[in-house]
Length: 346
Figure: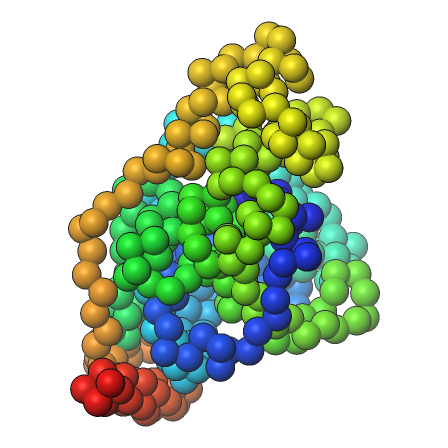
């Protein structure tokens, strides 16, 4: 779900081209991105791409070709994987699992009635990311020479941390949580840019990357990062999905500006509320569990390893993979040779 602060973002977000990101290191929320691939890379009836052994390959397809696109755009990607979720996220994860099961039942019914468009819509809601799928994704990144980081807990918190340290320029995710975790910059839509069909409509829209600055958001609404976290909690986060009944963005803004003590805001809304629960959520956002145990190094793609994983193990087309690897080789040379020259003569 992620924190729902979209209404705060609308006046501040900027559409950008990929050229805007050229030469920049982008810390990508790996799980969020892989789920995007699982949702969008499907057959007409909603079936995921699979190899001859029945193993799902949609996520690898998206990760392989989109990552090479990033290199061609001059972007230096680093993927950040989730670790163990905070205990407070358990309820949200259980809720997601239930919704996936309900969507699967609707998917089967739609298939039985022959409504393929409806089937695809429900199928997209059933996506699951298994440990084997994650391991394959990491193995592919290793073969491509792309760095990845294993977060101890929330991937978006770790991504925000490395941006705050100056090791990356921005986080990339469809969710806004990295802003609450303190990321100075967030880029959206880089994994799903391009033509997309609107559900249940014969209309296609062009999705472009979006760029957000935390500082601009805070200045526009005249709030602090702490108050942004408070607003997120009032509306609902992964740690308190329901938020507070009757609280929308306007009232949440009004409350955090009028009442400086967040505990007083909570008690105003719910006299029986457990303040320690909400203070735990605040602490997750303001003092997240992160690690310095990472190295950011981009290497030339290892052709043999990529082919062994994608072609030999997962039945990808050898011609398509080799063509993509040739593109990656050229992009890598341009990106890192040019970067080295600029550093040398800068």
